[in-house]
Length: 202
Figure 1 (cartoon, rainbow, N blue to C red):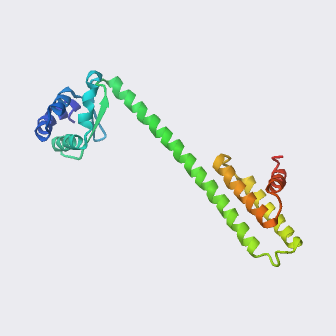
Figure 2 (cartoon, rainbow, N blue to C red):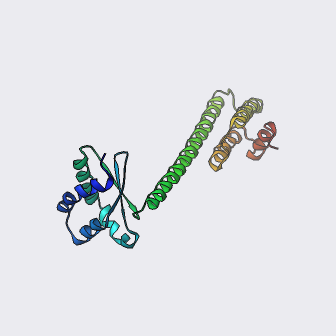
Figure 3 (cartoon, rainbow, N blue to C red):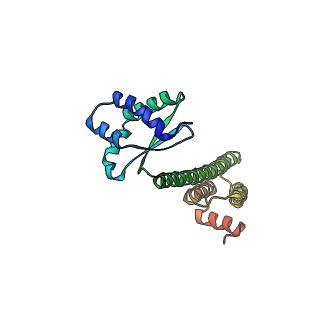
């Protein structure tokens, strides 16, 4: 297998022919090949020449680098530019990649939890509407009282199963409380107090 140095040496003349501008040429001449892994040619630019890196990150320049490297290797090859030219610089870039992926995964996990919580409370909210619609003679307080009891029990059960207590989860919970308060003509604070007592939060 060819080394990063060999690949870059063979690809560089083709790249130079495919780009224009002294800045781009200066940047290409300062590049140091670092590694070839998983069909990615990793190259670096010295910290002292970091102002030249922008030329190499231009889409047309990056594309030319990848076309030339692909031609040398005979298979699709990506080119990655990092800051610095040493193995230590590459290790730092990989650690940053890993940290970025970790944060993205955390964000995705949080987003999925928020969506699941929202979906759960949306279901409860819709059930409250359907149950109230099924109440006959809604003007009678005893019928609204029966609805109130069913609604409180429904929300209390959903609260027990709740796993996400962030701001969004609490807002969706409150939305259901307000819906019961509206339908049953009981102040939302009292609705909340009754449910929180039932689930052991008060």
